[in-house]
Image (cartoon, rainbow, N blue to C red):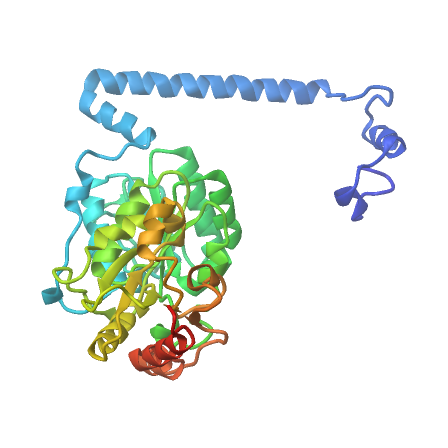
Length: 440
């Protein structure tokens, strides 16, 4: 290599320079007087690679032609998957929930949804960083993906049948192991190749280990679905190392990454629907470990409003709102409790569910002003995460109930209560805001 700059940072951070290039050529035995010189053996190797690529492409087209001649229906399915087309009517498989289904963690609603989708979208493939049982992402009965030539070490337990189904290239569950960065990178490569819709799952706080690969997926606009569970201090005893705080804010700041934090089972279904259909970049689904109420959509707005990023969940019958409560995820049901208490006290308030900032920002000004009327300055946001960014929606006269500290190891409901995520605290903050905005 370079006689004066090899093994130094200069070789990495700056051009070699004319004289050092000449000396490098001399060291390599190349002609010193030729610019952009390519040795014959290197040129021949690259040309052989081009020919090899042409042969492989020709083989592929012959195999596709043979398939078309023998099984036109299967050939058409192959064309559809490679083109990124979804099967007709796939949305009909999505589950729906009512309050009679009981309280449900959004990770559990996500499990019911992904299993339903796997039945109608055959190229939905993925796995987790050794956390299938916790993230609820195992595609039961769909087999394990691994080389058919793999032989387990002597004495090792059999791997076939971990989730049911066959083992081999037909398996749709990928056991990535505890390697989140590699998992996300593999998913990006799969998406860019085409033909599969990959998902990758882990705890939300471990998204930090995935970040370089997430960023490249966003930069490449790769259609990857991230399933991030255990989304807040509400997860409980695992404590601050596992309780996300800053992740929502930091991932929202990443261009071309769509982030959704659904508030109940039906919003989770809608979030999955958005994630499957959104082909212009990666989507992150941020889901709870703890159970949440399944909201009564017969008296509240339908969860279909998730598609707009934010929607009015509930209004007061007392007239136009004097106060707006904005919440995401597990905090929405708490904000709804506060709204009901304010209503009983004669305070006209509105509850806005805002599962996705990106989708809401993409709406026309007329819609955004309908959800968040500019004249209503008294606003409170409620989210168990960093307060960074909520100023956009609550304004200078509003209040942000968030976290400017790490969590604690205790039962989730206790941590939430002690850090201010209760209906009583929301009501107290709301009244304080109203006292300072009496003209609003």
